[in-house]
Image (cartoon, rainbow, N blue to C red; front, side, top):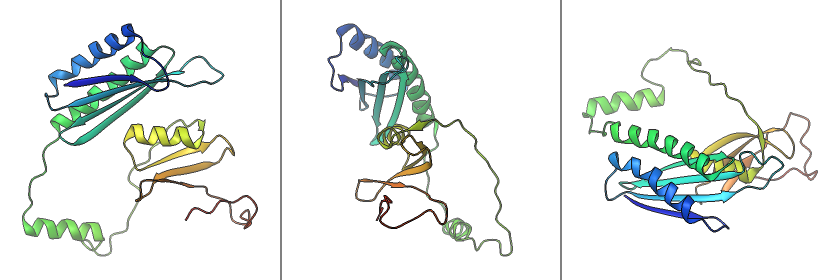
Length: 196
């Protein structure tokens, strides 16, 4: 595995670089020589000194990208946390069964299930609910979190207006933000942004 450690607008100290490389070395038992790893370290300035050191890891395994991000009070703590996250994802990737070709009749069944025509008369229902803590953040932070998770959209509380927003990746590679408004609140030309 080839590992690159770099800083985002900062010089990485040799001790931190060696620490990161040593931590990433433990992933080599899951990965092969064709895997590239990038560790990017940065500092986020905000009121609290805690969680201001950021470590982001990007692994490219057989053309697939795995990402992780962690915030901590020191780079070493952030590196420990993000390597743990990425290690779990690498194990999942290695153990994930490879997709095999399905027989034609099985493909038809799956297509009918996807179309909702497999079981006529069956009522759709909510079968799972997720609950999680959510803290206000700015759009840029939401985009970074979405990318770190490897998702195409991310629900967050906008720190500017304290409302739920969704940031998403558009087909052209840019990003969009969905800002829901309560019926009657929307007034064209009064600070509402067009999303297109």
